[in-house]
Length: 117
View (cartoon, rainbow, N blue to C red):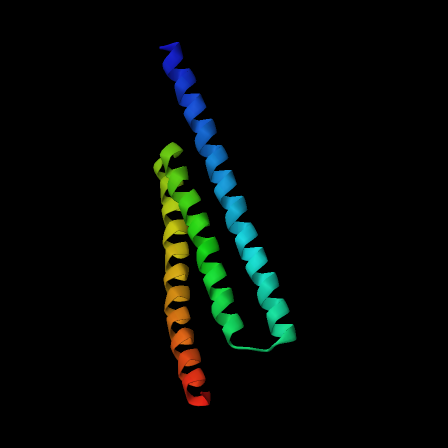
């Protein structure tokens, strides 16, 4: 049974590394999106910047949410699962709101571009 414990420890290490990698990617996507949006706003003042930034935030949150889902594989007790579940719900809600806002922004931008054409 010693080998089973070793496999369990290896699995936990792989899960923790995977979660860390996904979280780093998510944060990088968020930071790059924020920097690009700030630059676009400073240079162009265009509304499309909002759409690009919302898209970057949505993608970044998806990476973070994926990390949270994977972290549930090694949760030891109900308190950890509850905390992870709450974080997942909050991130999913924010992602949904970003998607909704992006749709409205896209519609407004297309409407404005249609008027000017």
